[in-house]
Image (cartoon, rainbow over the protein chains, first blue to last red):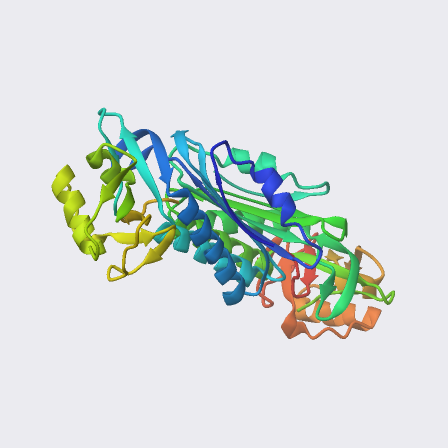
Length: 137
Length: 137
Length: 80
Length: 80
C-alpha cells in the first residue's frame, strides 16, 4: 500500500497507523511534523500551508512509489495538511511499515526529506510581531 | 521528559504520543516493534518476552538519559511489553520529540538499537511446527 | 494563443490573484511569459530559483507552450 | 556465604527454576559459581557469551561475591 494525501482537516494518526498494521511487518516508523512555537528565533503564532493540489498529489504519489522501489518496505502513507494551522497542530504525518526496522527508518526519513524538497506546498508563518511571510527557502 | 517502562498489558501508542506533544517541538518520530508472522523463514504463531525487571528498568532509564545527552531532543519515552504476545501485538514503542527531525530520527533509531543490545529482556518464539525457543543472538 | 497562469505563495501575493488568462503571440516561450508576468506585477523573483509546471506536470523552461496551456511558476517549496 | 542465583530465558529452562540459594565457600569467584551452576544443571552455555549482574547491576566477572548477594547470569538479550 502506497498513498499520499492532502487534508483540509485535522490528521488522525491513530487511524492512519492502523492501516499500516500488516502481519508480515515487524516495524513501523512514524514521523509527525508539528507547528512549533518558534522559527529561527522568531516566535510563531500560527501558519498557513498552500498547495498546488494536482501537482502536489502526483508528485507525492511519485515519492511514495519511489520509496517502495528504494527500500524493502511493505506499507507507506503520507498526509500533508493545508489551510490555517495553530501551534501544536499536526502538519504532516508519515508512516512506513516493513519487515525490519532498518528499512522502515530509512524510508520514513527519505520520504519526509523528499516531500520537503519536491512537493509544491508552501508555508506562511505568522509571527507574534504581526508580520507574516511565505517561506521560500 | 525521559522514561522507560515495562508493561504487562497492551501498550497504548495514542496516550504515549500525547505526552510528547510539547510546544517547542517540530518533530516526533515513533518506532513500533510488532510481533510478525515469520522469523528467518519460520512461521511464528506467538511469543513470550521475559525480563529481568529491576535491571531492565535501570538499564532502560540509562539509555533514555544517554539519548538526551547525545541528541538535541526534548522528550523521549520507551515502553517494552512482557509476557505472552500474539501475532500483530505491539512489543515495543519508542517516541522521541525534538525541535527538528534530524535529532528525532537519530535518537529514536539509537534508542531501539541500544534497547535491543543492552536491556535484559528475552524473546521466545513459538513456531507453527510446535517448537519454541529462546532467542540468544 | 490563450494560456492560464497560476500563482502560489509569495508570487500569488505579488500578482494579487490566484490565476489569470493571458493572450500570447504564437511561439512565446515560458521564459518570455515569465518576463511578461514579472513586468505586469512587479515580480522580481529570479527565474533561476523557480520551477515551472505545464498542465499539472513539471517541465523544463525550454518546453513549448500551446493554446489552452495551464502554466504555474513555482517558488522554492516549504512544506513539511 | 549464601548467595541467590537467578536464571532467565534459556538458562532458566535448563536450570528448571527461576532462582536458587547456594552455599559457597568464602572467596568463591563469579566464574567458579557459574561453573558450579553449569555442573549442577548440565548448562553448557559458554561463559564468554554471558553477562553477569550482582544485586541488580551489571558487574565484571572478576567482581567479588558477598554473603546475601543476588547473582544473575544473563544470556545475550533478544528484546525489541
